[in-house]
Amino acid sequence: MFLTIATITITGVLVSQVVFPSLGSKLLVLVHTWTTYLGLGLFGLHIVLHGHYLMESVRRIFANLRKSNARETFVRLGTIAAIVIVLYSRVISIATNNVNSQSTQYATQIASSSQTTPTLTGREK
Image (tube, rainbow, N blue to C red; front, side, top):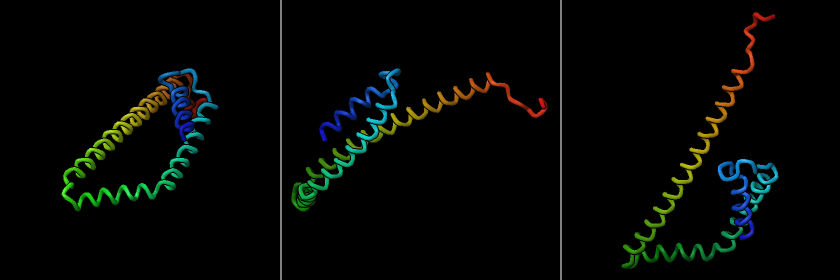
């Protein structure tokens, strides 16, 4: 799992059009994509293998709710929720900006190509 995370990170940086605009080879993209799929599979397997520990942790959290440690438990859960929300909003923001910039580049390419090629109106026969 460590090797897949390291490979995903390294190939992600190498494929990045921002960091290295000229290194975006198809082989690196292919390695990055398939290593990501492998990493997701290994992560799923990891969760399945450690499901017992995960369930025990969840039971312990809810057991704390029944005790006097409810405030501490809510603070921990709130902190985790806040971290997840901040990270999720950051990822969505980056993805949206990336899609918008790619759309702008694509529209610019279309506009420039339509200016250089004459269009036929049907009268040129």
